[in-house]
Length: 338
Image 1 (spheres, rainbow, N blue to C red):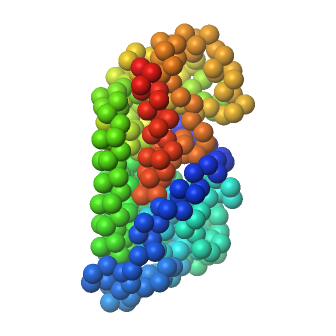
Image 2: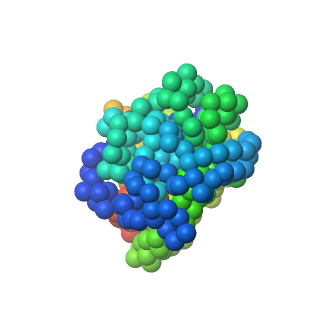
Image 3: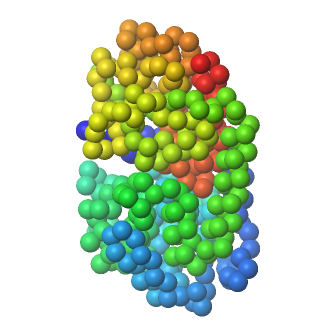
């Protein structure tokens, strides 16, 4: 059973004031050699045509796009931090289907698109008359690409698979698509600088083993096992490493579902980080097997809020900054207990 990407439903409003400050570049003027434009307006026609090559094909963008649909948090946040507004977005965690970190930068009311088990409703996307579809971070793009690309130039992942591109890759891709490559590079440098400073500020995380899990149904827990997973990569960036016992788990996906009887694999010299549905959390934390884990006994574990877990699951140039301010201190407490 695959690890449910969009199972986090409502992000907490905590940290919204901090998020307002995340528009470190979104309100800035244009880059050297690029038109400044206005927030919501893509670059001038001089930057086009643009050709984007990715793993599923090629997107030929003939003119500055005016009606952009973003089908993942990674695509949306990249667009927003570059100062461009979408007409359609994928439903995410948070009130109204918009994350706490994206909401302050949205100036309009884009259509919120909900994905089913096999992806998005193509007809609803078509009704938005898009001239660019951003799907670099879309988990369903393998199944959707043929139909989406008939509607408008469509992006997709550039590396090994859906939901595996680093946020930097998606941001560069979006920056090229909207004619703001220099600004994209600027944002990457600034956010990576913040990550480096946060890593230096938290030496207790260096080399610390961790597990990242989610409980969405009674009696079992989904455990991230792949070093290609975005959330795992994010914690790696702060100096942590995936627990060997979890990394050795076999599976075709980036996570495996384990019964609580096998929860022992989460233990060892480990900081246990998890999210549990609020209705299930008491049962998990009251479970004898869970309580007897060495990491739990020594207090080296933390239950994440909806927003905290969501930010880790999908690192973006906006959510990474939320992680630094709102997630890293929580994980640090667990690491220090170990």
